[in-house]
Length: 453
Image (cartoon, rainbow, N blue to C red; front, side, top):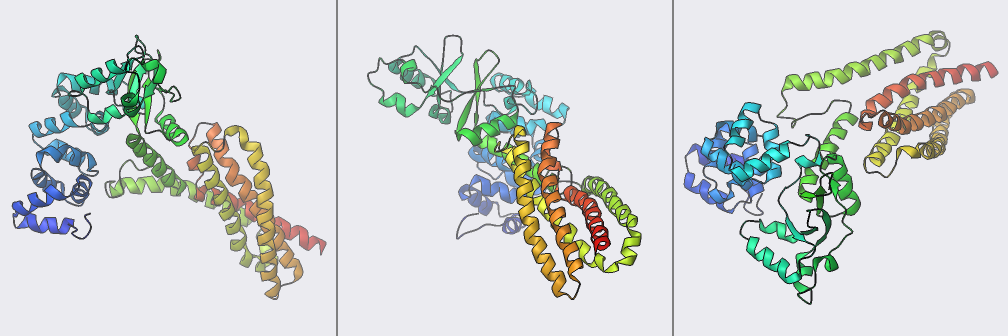
């Protein structure tokens, strides 16, 4: 919102209730596009339809592209001519993303109403798989042939300035006579190049490598993480330049991936929409499935406790320390899992590194176990229990924490190996696994120790 003169959705509602359209128009003239869209997200779709007509016409497309919650409903309710104008002037990537989620009959109708040029661009983008780089690509770019001189290149840009968006002139791509990608050159380098007869192949930068149009969106995210480039040239299987992917479109993919990982790491499935957009019944089904799976794990925990019924009756005081021990193992496992999930996601860790990780986690888990074991020993011993009970707790803590660290670090590798998302090795799953093994470790250590002393 604007600093010092914030406009809230409640104020917008008040102006709308008294039909103060003059004030609303003046507000929408000065508010940034993203702030207007943020207000729209807090309103009902009916109010959005009314207010959208008050947004200056030259800003409607940008405002609409920022709206997150009501886009689809507005498309279905706005007049066809308004929808046509919006989609016609929208960035190809934003338009494709919006059309993907619309019913097929509405999508076909909208695409059919586009101008021939925009219709062709949209059909090209929809010809690529949904999770491919082609869906993120802007098929508009400035391509200069390698044999162009600096003078010819500048003349080409001037002649095409009217039909090419100004933002695309910041990255100029060099191709051969067949359209195959060779490199890129900045506009600044082109302007200061001397003499004017210098050809493109002499000043182009060849370090920016292209990606295949059929590649995964995640490949593009990894590319940006590694090379920190504002854009990526995209080629087909014949190495012909077919478009570019810009950084702001990659940010959306990275955010979606991060959200998916957070949802799964929290012990639930992925939400397709935001929390408030997702129907309650879908939230119930989503969370109930995972809770049911985890409940089965808890049943295994109960069965493990039943197996040591005689031991519990003979040494009932051990139950007091059970939560402390298995929680320590679960926490250690969650720490290790989160580190490995992130490491695998950003390519800091590869599948081939599993043995190195195992060695490190055995060592780290042992160190953590010793630290917690000493703390546990002191806690039990000071609590007027015998040194043998304190020893049982200490040794159990070491064993459970080591197991938790190893399990938490290795489970993402196993899931990745079988082509599953490592994020599903979530904190609750690790905790359930450690609960069962922790009980086995604790009571077996207790039985063995008491048999010795």
